[in-house]
Length: 179
Image (cartoon, rainbow, N blue to C red):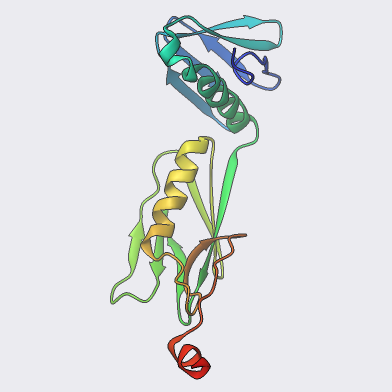
């Protein structure tokens, strides 16, 4: 038995429709839908959703995973998700042109990032806030932006998550001074 999969999901503040192979969830922030695998079935009881597994043992890991996906969908349409990135570097700037995010991060040209549907960018000085209803999509967009200029360990320049700690390395001069 899956410890996570057998827990009921409260659906207060969201409207849930379950058909044979699809789940549609609507809330104050938006609407999300996902196709369910054949091994997963969902039952609606009062204000709870219960996820059931009905397949081969080798695919039982899907049970807890899909329960978490559905829980995140409900949280997303009720409250939304947000990731915060920090840009560190001398002369590096971030701004928004229309819906696009424009990064000037030490390359010879600015880099434009177009948000997928359901994602919003907000910038304040050197902070980028990425928000949306789909947790997977918010995380993927944040990861792609971070990969443009990941933090380097010597000077600490780069794009990092807000509370990420980058271990700094000692430079060449300090290493030769120790010998």
